[in-house]
Image (tube, rainbow over all chains, first blue to last red; front, side):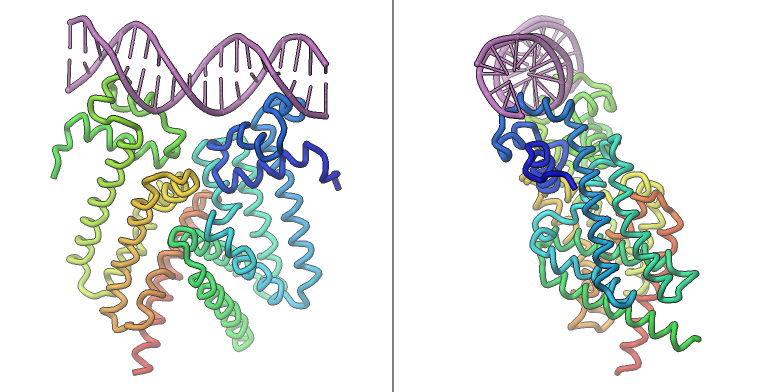
Length: 195
Length: 195
DNA sequence: GTCTATACGCGGATAGAC
DNA sequence: GTCTATCCGCGTATAGAC
């Protein structure tokens, strides 16, 4: 665990938020410097280039996401509970999603368009969720369809974020979360009745 | 119908593609000028600012989308057929979606982050699809849930585009299109059995 | 470790010749 | 209607004082 009070960490934290809120390319050193309350020149003591900041942001996100998935793994008693933890981040982060969309999806899309060196890291973040979900579905007994279900759920979550942001609609999130939970219950029930 | 051979129209067409492929902010006059093969200065005879170009692009997209929806309306014999036309653009545009995501969704997300004046126009484009889908569901007899179904389908389409782009996965598109068609048949069947 | 001053290039935008 | 030349501000990045 790195010390969270260091200037370096404050830069990473501020940059992460700004990249999420305004986009990576649009965010300048000036923006970050204002938030962290340091001078623009001071930056280059901590990071050589803007891309280096992005690299640090991606590493931090990766660590945070991994920690969150581990936590869900511990807290959820059943795979179904754990998958519901995933579905419910849409509710937990509702306000941010309405305002800025999904932090993972939107940044990845931007970096892909810029053909940025870190776009692979951004995709890894999505893959982290995908692999975790797949494991949960496997534990539910879906050996064959686990991967399909994981991607399906991830896609629905992305779509909900995109539209909730576009129409600034929190009610829609609640509605879709309910549908996802029903879908989850349904495929589990259907599997039981087949065996 | 405006003359498609004019320089003005060529600029709009080139800009539209570049905004889609590389993003609006990242695209410079140089990029567009290279594609259209005119000098940078010549631009300002046709458009006063970069934002003016975007406005023209959005107007063109709006017209094109409206025309496409009208065409689907005529070609589809039943509302179900028409909704399937919507679902199938994912297949039709598969290659572009894999490479660049959904043109409507990704540009809208970018403009929202930039808090750009045209972000409302971009949202209107999504709303065009939404209203059209809602009407189809209403024609199917869903008076109460028509809006929910329209948003649901739109969200799934957005999510599929996002992930197909992230994982560069065309097979996933086929898979999800099939699931959407099954979902459509299912809600129609369920409604019949209730009445 | 943090600051100020500054170099440098790029992108948007203007002026004016042809 | 298209061109070249040019201005200007901003953003990244560097140098060097404190």
